[in-house]
Each structure stands twice: as C-alpha cells, then as structure tokens.
Amino acid sequence: PCLGAACIAAAIGARKSLAGRIEAIILIAAPEETAAALALRVAEQSPDLLGLSLYAWNRLFLQETAAELKRRMPGLPVIAGGPEAGGLGEKLLANGSLDVVAGGEGEESVIGLLETFLKDGRIGRRAFIADPVDLAEAPSPWLSGDALPTPGTRVHWEMARGCPFSCEFCVLTGLGTR
Image 1: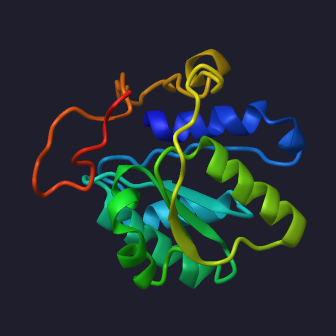
Image 2 (image 1 turned 60 degrees about the vertical axis):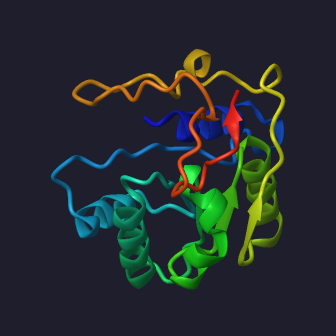
Image 3 (image 1 turned 180 degrees about the horizontal axis):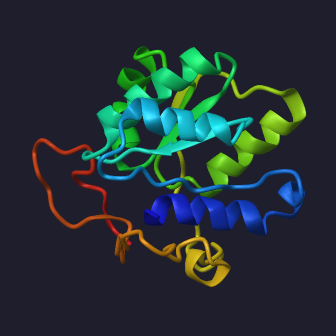
C-alpha cells in the first residue's frame, strides 16, 4: 500500500477511542482494473466511510471511482487526502464525488473526522490543510503491519514525506521533506 494510507491505518489502529469501532481496510487497484470494477469491490465491503489517497498518477481514476460509488451508495461519506489534496482542495470538492478533502499530514485530522463521524453520523463537506504531525509520536505503519505488502502486490517504497524538488507545476512545491 501507499505510505500515506498505511500511516492513516496505523493511526486508526493505535487510537484507543476508535478501538473496536473502526476498521481500516486498504484496497489496492489492480493495474487493469476499471473505476467501475474498483467501485464494485469497495461496495462489496459495505463501508460506512471511504478514504482515498490521491496522487498525480491516480487522482482522476479515484475521482471516477468515487463518483461511481456515490451512484451506488449515495450516502457514503468520502474523504480524500494524499499529495494531490493539498493544493487542489476546493477544486476537488467541486467535482461533487468527495465530501472532505484533507491536505497535509492526515493521521490526526482523519482521526478527528472519524471521531466526529462516530458521534454525529456525518463528516460535513469541506477542504482543509492539516498541521504536521510529530513523527516521533506517530505510530509506525511498518511495525503495525499496515504497510506490509500482500502476496502478488507491488511495494511502493516511500521513505520521506513531501518532495525535495520545486517544480513549477506541482502542488507540493516548497513543502520540503521530513
């Protein structure tokens, strides 16, 4: 799985207030899988809430998947995070298939959204940039097992958060790495 999704899953698993109440399941789209096929696979899991990790290479595909899921499951709240969420929040919301766009580091912000969802049954509709987390305190997705690949899948090897480059066209420009 992608590092961001695994970090979120590890944070969910480590939070006592969510223990036994929230289960994070990471699904990885197969290279040949269509958005409709992935949406069907997600729907078969009967999720109460969906989180998407948006990268430059999957953003349009996952937006199409989210739109298909909204047709199948109109009340399904959809949270999007990942590198593409940071600079495109309001634009991504305008598409209509996403309910919350959480830019920045998501461990604490997603926990807050989940706690709100458990309390109120909804998450609202908004875009925001989360504050950085203290990496010394963040649970390790490697130690929790959330980042371990399953047989037959690829390993996405990510060693840092952010990007060291300053490309003019990129939403990550100027964020640096940690």
